[in-house]
Image (cartoon, rainbow, N blue to C red; front, side, top):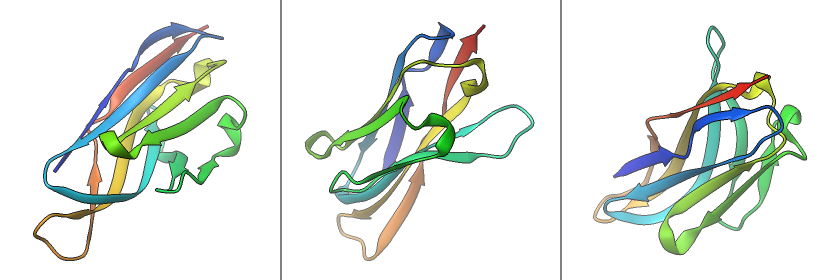
Amino acid sequence: VQLQASGGGLVQAGGSLRLSCAASGRIGRINDMGWYRQAPGKQRELVASITRSDKTRYTDSVKGRFTASRDNAKNTMYLQMNSLKPEDTAVYYCDATLTRLGALGEWHYWGQGTLVTVSS
């Protein structure tokens, strides 16, 4: 199983980006998914999470600006980021908790990260 994050890039303050996180492999069912970010010199923080039934949670600094969504048929999660600020600059990672075909229990995976740079 692999998670592939994409969609990062360089954008001016006030602009928008849409990140994607696609899961592939022998996946049974993806349960919770999340977006994290890590800025230089800082700890990784949870930005948004989304359950299989589309219940979302956000860290306070992105509420009203970021929207997490997912397409269960495509095993893909998205993060629409609007009104971006320089302090949103970070490497963004996705994670997923899922079941695997032919294996017992739940498994946790990380994506490789995608860099978002917001210029002032």
